[in-house]
Amino acid sequence: MDENGFGSNVALANGLNCLASFQSRRKQHDVSRELNRHGLEIIKEENSPEAMWQRMKIEHGLVDARSRGVLHADMVGKFEDLLRRRVELGDNNHIGRTELEIARLCLELGDFGKALHFVERALASATSVRYANLIVDTELLEVKIRRAMGDYRGSRNYFLKADESGRDLGPVREPEIEEAGEDLEKYKASVFCAVQFPNGKYLTSISEDGTANPVLVELANTKNVEGGIREGLEKLLNSLRDMSGLKGEEGVSISVRNTRLKFQYKENVGTEEAPHRNIGYGVFLPETSQITELCRVLDKNSILGYGITDSWSESPVKE
Image 1: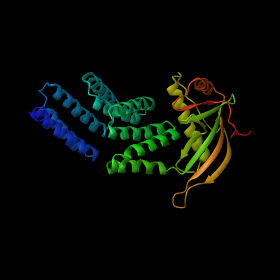
Image 2: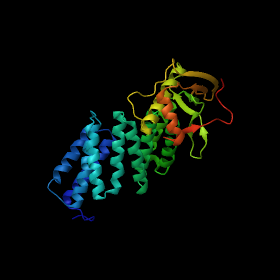
Image 3: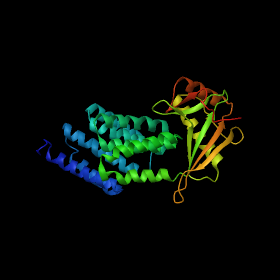
Image 4: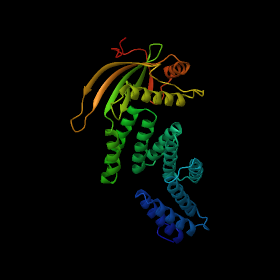
């Protein structure tokens, strides 16, 4: 027995799993897989609680390494089964890590609503056990998920949270946070949209202090600003619709034919080395059943930090 009460085989399997995790972070997934397979072979006949705990860690690593290659939908189910077993065993320190992997896979598979659900569960799990590295991981993943959903303002907010959380970890997480920041800096324009529904009410992004803000759409280039606005808003509105539980095969469609845009202002706020523009637009949504239903739902409850306001103190949309 070692000093922690683990049998020698479990201790050896744990050591191999730690090496496998290190290799995985270095993107050496084939090496990671072989180390975990060796560790699993060592403890396959053991049935102690410690061995069960270690097998789940190794299985997690094996599915994770496999998912870094060719992605299959069944991998989500494997992680969900692992999550169920971890909950039953009371493995609270690793529940959040499994929830995070489910969120990552769902993002890659395009199931953004489920990805958001599990990343927020993972953040709650990590916070409850004060797992600092996992908190940073979840916040960085939420940056990507919200951006994929068209929630550019929420994405920025979660990057700020990840940056703050990572400071306490020193240089360990600096490269990943810097990389995420560099990805955000690729966007050359911030477009602030006063999005008006057919009934005259506005879609707003609600700050934590309750302030109603115009909807933010970020663009990687400014060659087709209005096309980028329509594309970004369509993505956001369909995400809100999906999360609202509204049924129907047809989603929201925003096109040059049905959605009028009105230019408001443009200002250069960047530098010659890092050019950036702030642009203002009024957006007049089409009168369709999908838009009307979404407005009705948002008028009752906010979704993803978005809600409805009857008017602005100074309306940014002028006919």
